[in-house]
Length: 407
Image (cartoon, rainbow, N blue to C red):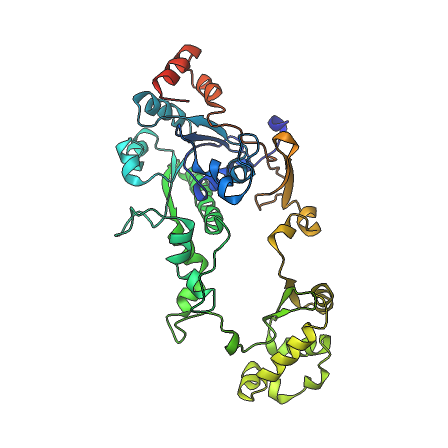
């Protein structure tokens, strides 16, 4: 079936030497849309294989949905990159590769002859994609970087997203990694496009810190002027038309205006606060706050929202073309008809009949297909097959396994 699939990246070969989330997810995205991705792991394997242990999710070879999110459809080989035979094998893999994708630290890559300058000389058309935590330069270039540290803490986002002084919130596991993978993906695709015009490969780089700064770009610019902090303050709310409200059913809903002066009367009408229509004290945001009416309007809004369920309110606001949404719990998302209808999740049956609704890569084409999820299987699942394709005999493969060069 796959041979007949029409995918935009068919014919692209990627050799991946990376672990955990951001870089592997980038390779997974390439793979989903047709690229052949050969993932190199050590004999210990990618740590993401065991992430299910603290996420309270199964993580056996044939029942590992967390690992599958970032690694479905890849071919898995286990190579000791420090061994001579292992290094030679990687060179054979790279000989016809389009992309080498890695998040191994620069010093280690250089020691093992896998740095950009070395590979550029051997494979001038190769797109060399290197991912780091803090970037390749500067005093912290060699520091270990994680989603929670480089993306969230160092970018300022985690500080500004919560009420100042409160205990730091904990983002969903790998949120920053997943966001950054899309940035990395776009860079690799641009490099491949450029190579088609120039015939030359290039080095593509990004980092969790760079991505965290880009995602918080408006805030980073804004805090260079009057406002030094952007933390929400429930005691200093100024715009009732863009706020969170508790509903009768105990759920939060948020309403979002496009433009206060134009939209305010629609809000007042929906909530049955007609007495505010035409009141000059609430005509603009400035008037609302300068007149002291802001407190009254918030109190009236809170009272009205508390009288109806979140679903009732959403229906009323949407009917007036007012953007709003109910704050959903994460366990509701995989059952959401809107999500299912659009193919944003896909059911995959793992070993033992375990069925999981798996989040899908978020790009859709009218004329191209995407590989469906598959079960990732054990470490080194495809080593023998891949090495046979590279020209190794069964005897040579057995010898390399005995020497610990591959698994």
